[in-house]
Each structure stands twice: as C-alpha cells, then as structure tokens.
Length: 572
Ligand SMILES: *Cc1c(COP(=O)(O)O)cnc(C)c1O
Image 1 (cartoon, rainbow, N blue to C red):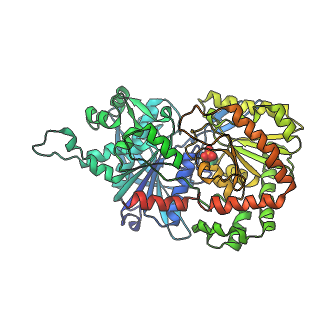
Image 2 (image 1 turned 180 degrees about the vertical axis):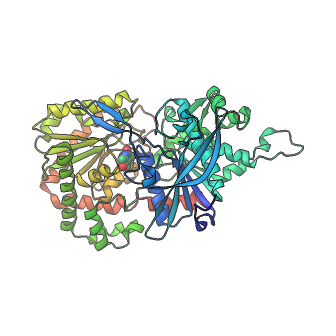
Image 3 (image 1 turned 30 degrees about the horizontal axis):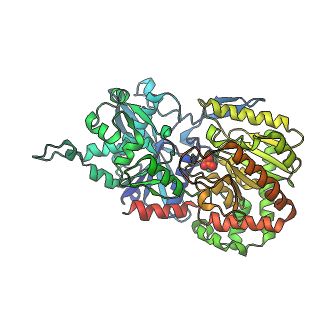
C-alpha cells in the first residue's frame, strides 16, 4: 500500500538514514543519548536543506528508561509508556523478516519532519508489536538497548533487513543507505541478496555477490573509538536467529572470521566510511587498518540547540542564522550587554528549573558549572572531585555545579558514579552547591547548556569520539572547559574559545591518561584563570562567550556537517 506515503515523497530517489535510536522530539523517548540526538539533528538539518532523505529507526514503545534517584543517588529504572498515535501515523504496509525460522511481521509509523524552508523528511518507526506475531516477537521493538544479545540481534534484523524491505514496499527508490553506527549493518546483507546474480562460467563465489554494487550504495559512520564497544555476535547465535541469509562462508569474509562484527560488516560494504571528528577518524584508522576512513566532524542543529533568549538576539542581529549558521562569524555585531542579558535570562530559567525540580536554590551571581552526559566510567564525572578539599578551598562561595545523566541499567560503575556525586554533594553542603537533575533528556540538555556559565567535560582520551553537548553550549555563548578529545581538539583555542584540561593529545592509546595530572590542571585553571576572569573581568568573559559563538558555533553545527556528507558521501 503506497497511499499512506504521499506520492511526491516517493518520486525522487532518496538517501535512507538508518539509526537504532533517533531523538526527534523530547516526548518521543526513542533515544538514549548522543547517537540518537545526532540522528535527530541530522534529520532536522536534512529537512532544512531540503535534502531528499528518509529515515528509519525502531519504535521502542518503552523507550530507554525513566530514571529515579533516591537520596543516596541510587538509580532505579522505569519503562516509559507513550502513545505513538499521538505523534505519528500507522501505515497499513507490512513486511516480514525471518527470525529463528519464524516470519515476524513489521509495521511502520510515519512521522514527518518539516522545516520552515519547506523541506520534509519522512521518518519511519518500525514496530513488531502486531497481534499476528508471537508474544515474544511483539516485544522486539519495545526496549532501547535492553535485553540480551539475542534480543539485540533480533532488533538489528528488524532495523536493517526490515527497514530496507519497508522502504522498498513503500515505493521508495534509494540512492544511498547511510548507516549511523553498526546497529543497522545487516541492511548490507539484504542488499547483497537483492543484487545477487549468478555469473556464468565464473566459479569464484564472491563474484556472485555483487559487493561493489552494494558498496556504491552504502555510507557508514562509526562512533566507537574502542574495540570492545562494537556490536559483535557469535556465529552460532547468528545462524540460530538470522539463519543463512547469505552463506555463512560469505558472511564470515565480510563480518569477521570469529564473530560477526557489525562495524566490520559495515566497513566492508561501504564505499564511504567516516569517523565523527578528525581525531576519531585517526583512531578508527588505527583500529581498522586497511580501510579508507574519512572524518566529518559532528555538528548540532543550531535552531534546536539555541535557547529562546539567544534565538531572539540572533534574529535581531544575525537574521537568517538558523539556516545559515555561518552568520555567527559576525557575532561581534551583537552588543556585549545584550549577550550578557540573554545569558542571564537563560541562567535564571535554569535556576528556576533547578528550584522547581530539585528544590535547591542556586545563586544567579555565582559561576555555575554544568556537567551532563551518560553516567559511565570513561566520562569521569568525578574528576572534579579527585581532591574534594582542594575543590572546597578553590570554590567555596565561588562556584556551584549542576549535574545530570542516566547510567545504563547494567552499568554498575556508572551507577556508582552518580552515588559518588551525591556523597560529595553532602560533604560540600553549605560550601559549594551541587545538584543532580534526574532523567536527563533533550529539554534538560537545552536548559543546562544554555543556563550554566561554563560547560565541563572530562572524558578519558580518546574515548570521546566527538561529543556534542559542548557544541550545544557554544550556541548559547557558553565556553567549554574540557579535556582535549573529540571535537574540542578542533574547537579549542586556549583562553579564547575556552580552556583545555590536561595534555595535548599526542597518540591514540589510552595510556596517556593520568587522572591526577588532569585533575591538577583542572584545579589550577579554575583557581588561577577561570574564577578570576569570571568575577574580575566580565567584559573579557563576555568576549569569550562571543568567541564561543563566532568561532565554535560557526563551525560545529549540523548544517556544515550535512553539507559535507552531501559533497563527500551522498553524491559521490
Ligand atoms: C546532546 C545530548 C547528549 C550527548 O552529549 P555528549 O556531550 O555528546 O555526551 C546526550 N544526551 C542528551 C539528552 C543530549 O541532549
């Protein structure tokens, strides 16, 4: 049935963007963090730029999870319940995928992203919760990053294989398939099957599988800078659940000899491969020698990640900025006093949100530091607490800190980190105000990145493939104070756009991380440079805010990113 998809949507060949998670709006909880928010920004930008794109993801009816924290910071998880029919339209079209030998039906919900520029990107949420399916199959699209390996593989079958079939059934002609991370790599197998052709008189089996044709169609973005982070499945599991969609011998050549590595599969079947920052491209080339890996540094969707007060300011002084973020280069046209006023409006909005949700009164005149991201060990949320007494001496009455972030339900170290922050909060009570906002989501992200004075990031190098929350901060004139990793290696100009923490990155290994050295640098700069500048030289501080906008937001936006995807990956 093609009627549900307006004819004008299918008339032009499309770029099909596949992502396990997509953060398209705050109350559609089909995302967990950076990967999904980037996917949302990609789609919003494609609509702004009127790119011929469609996107595919899973419905995840129970979302990631709702975070509850008790007084000690212990996390409990609850499922979301949300009603897709409030946001999207269920299409009558169904396709089937084979899972454990059973036919599993897949349906799709259509959400349409539209832009003021008249651009439009249909987004399809795949859903197996259909009466005709076996009870266990109905749950395949319920939980994002939940369940065991088998569950994950089933989800990836629905996403990759089901997604290609669904687009085909809906009448789309696809000119590129863009895999946002390896979760959707199985789509390459569906394409291999579609294009297989027996070649007479040629006995080499590989030639029957038109690898080159599939490669021409596929674009792969990797986001994972460490070996253990890549999805891998044992071939026993693969054969049991997926069956031999292509002969095992062929699959092993493409996906790895010992286990099916979804990144390797994507790499072997994509002509264009990229990492998400220059450094990450380098790290990826070391991890996967022999592949040509480019780097297109991530960006964020400027309009989405700018708070109301700065939107008004940009509209006044830089009209057209939302669809042409290059205009940020003219930021010095905005009077300093108006930048400060817009910032204080955002800061007061954050502080009233904090008061409302956490019951804590913070001081609008105190330097406010923000730290929000997934609570997981490598992000080192506790680096600033390496020496609590030193922090007390430096920051007493001079700083306050807002934290947020969820730990994956199975990440015990991540959960411990949250508890540690809670215990330091008690220890510093009355000296340094610390709050932890629960249930970090896109709304809280915008409130925080715009409402704090300084955005802190202290990951273990080179684990931060790109990082995007710091890019959101700069759109609101908030400078970064961050370890030199990911995008910040490119965006950082010391004492100009913000400040670095720790040494310059010289190599791609993990050994160069010394927590104490990073912490020392953090404390030194906070004490000697940042705190004095904030309190004693406000005009210079506002100049840093302008630089964050004019030199960082100017570049680290998804309009620049998507134009590069178009010229380097999509139309080549
Ligand atoms: C932007 C964003 C992230 C990603 O932030 P990083 O700095 O890349 O870790 C995660 N979660 C939410 C809700 C976001 O808005």
